[in-house]
Length: 267
Image (cartoon, rainbow, N blue to C red; front, side, top):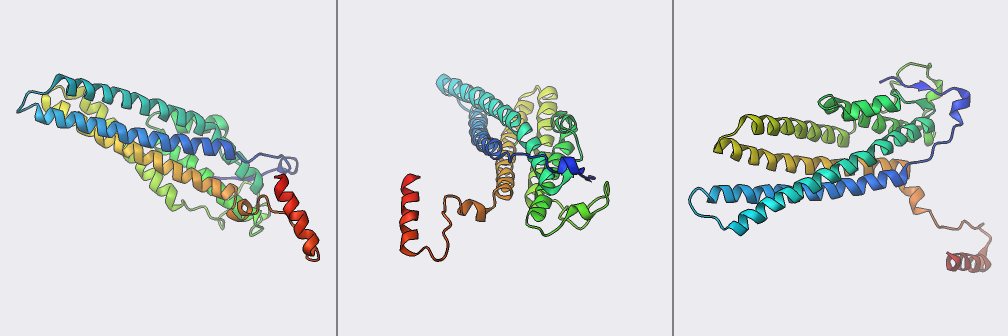
């Protein structure tokens, strides 16, 4: 990816940190992960009943309850996953815009390009990692710039900033690996479900569904971890820890303590 430095007028453009949007995405991702575990448990119960059904007569209530749990948990996990995606799309876009503005750079992709890389089936197995990778790298670059460690404006416009931390972070590598595994399992489920009409094929499809739900849960949790890392870069620990403190001059003495106590009471 190639970033260009902002023109002088664009450098002053304020961009708010998407803290609330990222927190919402983290919450939805965690909830999705929990529901995917429930869906995996429902499929495991179904598989256990299928195994028992080979040698014994099953209770109608067990079969009905199992089917209902599979349907409810599966649809709930899917709906919540879609809600996570809808929340994550603008959150990621705003994160990239914020990090790029703070570093004095322009993003390498437009908003429309990012949506395409994230949503086009098949292509998003690669594209989603690229978009999240840009957000991850830009945040680390902007953090270095914000601390005054580097000045990307000294670089030649349009050239890749080679000495800044552009390597993928460990969290991103883990997320991307889980994302690829989940995508391959989804393809396997579709293919096996379409071509496997025998009893063994149905059993294989249920097993694949279990693996798919487990991997989807792992992706959701990894997404929450990655976004939490974004939040920590946007709101550094030292800044979060100092919120609400009142700075007083060294000579304030006892009078300063009274002022501080009064300020705390007002809060």
